[in-house]
Length: 99
Image (tube, rainbow, N blue to C red; front, side, top):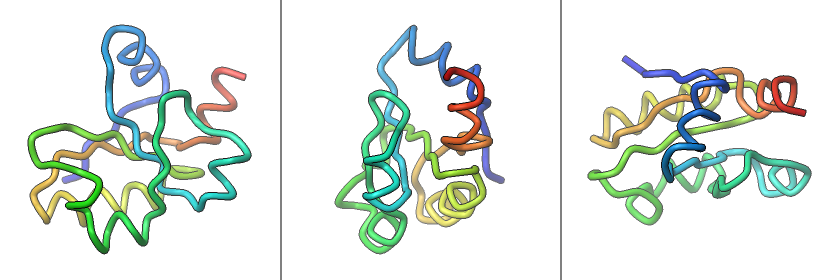
């Protein structure tokens, strides 16, 4: 089952420690705006060769535009043995909460 974190909880965690945030949107979407410290790895790359971007010892927080694609990506990555958490509401929720 996919774990989820709220934007408020994410922001609190970001202020306390360094966390790995992966934005799975396309490059052009990421360039228009993103969550600070996030890294852009489009979904198709991440799911095709996750070992190029993730290791199985760390936890990663996945973000997309609204949270649905990142939730699906989390499900697939969990089945592959990665520790991933979906950011509920995605980048749009982040914008509405903190901008």
